[in-house]
Picture (tube, one colour):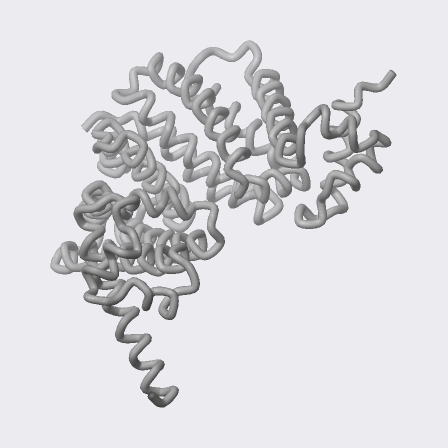
Length: 180
Length: 187
């Protein structure tokens, strides 16, 4: 038997390709997933709860992609760069869904999910930068994360990778750990 | 009163309320900036407020715009006599962060209005001005990819300001990371 939670999340991924975020509602999702509205309500509560779950799944897939891209690599700047490329690549590959999730950020609950995920990423990047001897690794990780998110937003609007944006990111990676 | 005279009176009272709001925001937190308090500081009857603004949120959005403009003007004044380049950019960013750190109501407004469409629009205009300033200084400094770097640095600076809002204090580690990066030797 198909898991209704999975069916509804899969339906969202499909619908994102053809439905504007503003036109999204629970009835449409339920029809697409062939799940009754009562099950939707029991599973996610409301549309915001659903979007939070969609955001969590998007980020889980993102982490899988970054882990796969960096498997077997030694710690260092190159590993961070490869992970960032995987992050940006995944955001572009899931352009339609990412568009929904960007629009959903204007809901405080979704923003809170993103904040939690950002803190996790910052800890991971910070430990890498600490191992590299950066003077303020957690601060640099927070700054780098803000830049990565902005880079992803810029590329989302372009609909393709931006060599300039990525070079600017690599510049921070190359020089952001310099001591005065 | 003629329509023209009534419009002039509304404009004058709006200016008085905004000026009072800006003045009070230098020392008060947002929750202390009530309609009654702002109107009292502007020597207006609070009942007049509804003729000036459709809601307290509309007033807050306009106040936010005034405070952002004030920060921009402060940065421009302090850096006016310096040659363009990284030194001026660092002073501008330090002034920008200090202005936010020392304006409690500005910090509160940025948080309170971040999900309000009108507030988001005001913030967007402020961001655009900040990014334009950063890009101009990077171009003078012949920084690689000045447009893209300005975009990313703007995001970083906004995030530092947010971190300082959350911590309710300056984050010297974040500021040092930003300024050390801008000072990093270039070939």
